[in-house]
Image 1 (cartoon, helix red, strand yellow):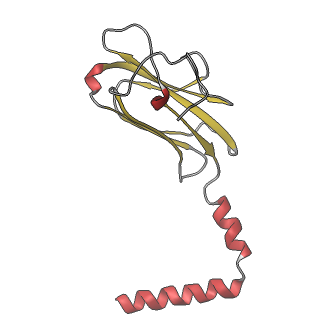
Image 2 (cartoon, rainbow, N blue to C red):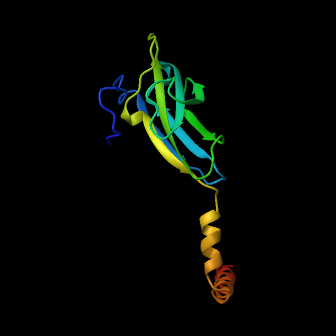
Image 3 (cartoon, one colour):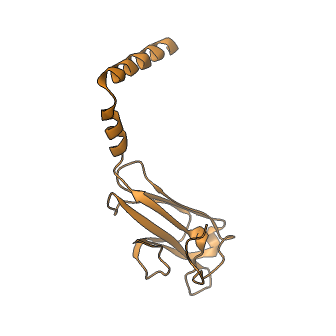
Length: 145
């Protein structure tokens, strides 16, 4: 993917960062972050920086969401529904002084309230169809017992 970044990539981490995923979580307005390194012992530290409007391009270009040194996952609860958040994973390799990143260390997600859209759609379905679906579900459950 081209993130609109030219000349600001500070390192090739494709053989260091196995995956970095950012997605809307299903439990309320939060963003789920998951990252995995090929070898945690190569990492002395990392920081996940978040920002609204564009991807963070340095460890000082946004808000610190998390700082650690090994693979894992995190739910960012400090979000506002209806806002797109951009995240960058900055990695400091063992024996090095500077944090690095590249495009495989970036992701974005929209924070929304869970169930809002499903509830809105559910209310649009006429009551008669909802009752019929409940009866069919109960009959199927009884047949399988």
